[in-house]
Length: 73
Image (tube, rainbow, N blue to C red; front, side):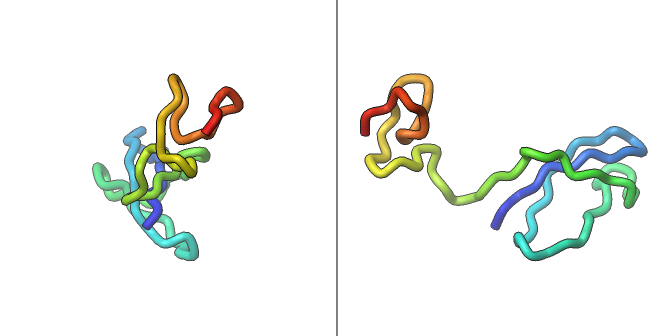
């Protein structure tokens, strides 16, 4: 299940919340229970996936899994 990053606009708490990609509800802040939270774009994680996502599953220097142009997997 994907995990999304949020920031509370009331207390500035940053937190991660797991929910399905089709769930459009906004979570409460775990610190102050506020509903005034904003999603931090670019913050999505998929639990259960390995860091190497390329076909070879190998790391090539600074990138991993054949995801950069210098990889030759």
